[in-house]
Length: 187
Length: 268
View 1 (tube, each protein chain N blue to C red):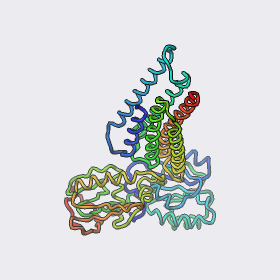
View 2 (cartoon, one colour; view 1 turned 180 degrees about the vertical axis):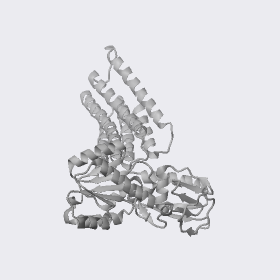
View 3 (cartoon, one colour; view 1 turned 90 degrees about the horizontal axis):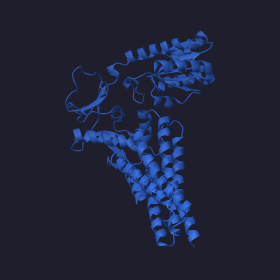
View 4 (cartoon, rainbow over the protein chains, first blue to last red; view 1 turned 135 degrees about the vertical axis):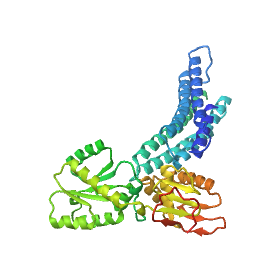
């Protein structure tokens, strides 16, 4: 699944940064383009009243948008590393990428479970837990950036990167919320 | 240059200046002129500890001592002692001959009375920096020989057997700092502050990444020697250790020879 693959690639990229595979940025960009294609495809089909939808069309639209957001923010993070000329990683960003990869895995499992009509709650709880963990790490990162005497350029770079990672994780939680609502409707 | 001092001698770019003054009109006009001449400057509304000035790696400081009241003399003395390579220009209103003499004897390089024209301030800072540079010849930036490696501050480069390690500016500054403190464990935060010129954000892995790059270049050129040792959770220590495990103390060679970088130099 595209979301899971993107999360894993970004985790690998930040974990080995600035070394590691040179093609990771390009691979993540491909995932983002693929995500756009999938989203447009689904939205196009939603206009066709003859197609059966597993949930309300407006909910499905929100779900597709949230999934697309996960990939978009992950790609933005990867892009920023190059754009800002980042020379070395920040521990908190590496941890956030690990949380994102885990949350993206959770999203995939939750979607598969939803399609099978099984109980989602354990997967949704795990995604919520990961989102809380992401919040904690982000706050720690931002606080350390605004400690006295830190280079303003470092603050600008990493604040943006940490925020885009956090938004990617938040989007995973949005997916969980939508699935939660759809499951309630289905009961 | 003394150990522990900033490294203006290895700075060839624009002058790095800090202005400690609360006179907003004066600071604004001066800042505009400084922008015009392309200097790297920062304005501070209050005195900062001398160690922070060290981290800023300044060439010069313009300070209004009246901000400090009775603590002014103590501060001036501490700054000139902590940052010996720093040119200090005092710029304040009304002063007596005795005050100016005391300030100059405590370490100020120049004293300007307000009101003054920003161009004059800039010219005086330039003159101070120029004099400092003249006084800071090659003898004060000795090359460092450790194991098979030679650090040449005059070329911002290091060599092994005449082979150029092709260090980036940051890698050179890191190696120069570490090799200049042999046997001493330097904490990551201290290394970052002295090489990058700012406080290290918690979690920033820059020092580790640059040490890794440096090690790769050193190991590639001098595979049987180990130079940089990790102290987990603390930082790094420079110690040249040969194939037999013997440690050598880097030698600081006072004069830089005219010839091209020396080949393999005998360990001290």
